Length: 413
Image (cartoon, rainbow, N blue to C red):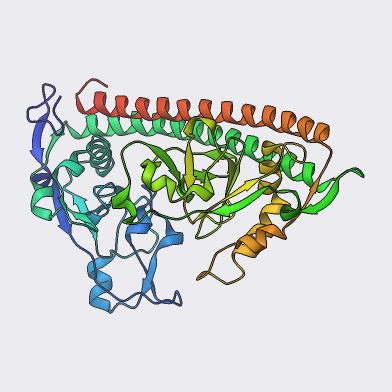
């Protein structure tokens, strides 16, 4: 079936345009929102971010009596995001209550004629959004995308008799409620697994034994240093060659190779003082990601780091890299690093080499480090396994939802 359809999918069904089934389609009131939260609640793009009306994310403004009458939303109205980032144009939310809310700009109000159920229309709009219809048809600029009322009105929609629409809505609402419950349970399981890991991580490094020795990174490290961005910035990066590790690759206990940059040998030679070795601990030292920390992966060597990432290297006789990484990402030490990085406020967010050198850590003997690493690695693997299960379940549930929508509008439900 084409999305949207061009012929009736089933006997007794019609294909109409949105312009034919809508009694009202219009933009909202353009008003100045009050920062103090006083006034009447006005819908905004953020209000429908989760495909529902989120009253915690409305704006507030003063409206006169004429505006109040003109822009008051009613149960069954649909809000359609027609000016947004390209991946969000076409998102909708169905007004399901009589709570006071007024219609704001950048959201088209859709109100159906009596022969079309608003829940049915909203499901259809959800369906074509998920199929990427608006991404293919909207007008795009550098900062945003948009679709105008004229283009919206032209969209064909399969229209069965009203009782059939209501039957479809009832089936899908019940099915989607079950899908939402299954998704929420999967999210809860994943959250609990992550909470357990964080709890064990925190307790491991807050309950130090008598044989733990307090020292500074400067005293135990053989290398602390950050690099630079090659002359020319991003335009100088290569499609292959020597890895240039940036802060966007460094996450807590995880290296992400998405958007990994590469430089050639000549560029790498200019960064010969920051050659990454296997087992190096990488610490983000500037920007919003300050204090994120992971171990350099062997599969991406040879490598260098730019100025936003510091190499922390310890001799094998003092610390196991994985142990140091776990220590620096535990709550106690993470909070200290964030405190250093944020001490200059939001305009600074930086940790200097000197601050890393005097940063205090407590290290147990190597056998204890190894034991801790093995315990935490095993728990981490269990958490990652749950994450994989959750992701597969999410994918399966999303596919099920789209399959049901596809069948519904093909007249096969």
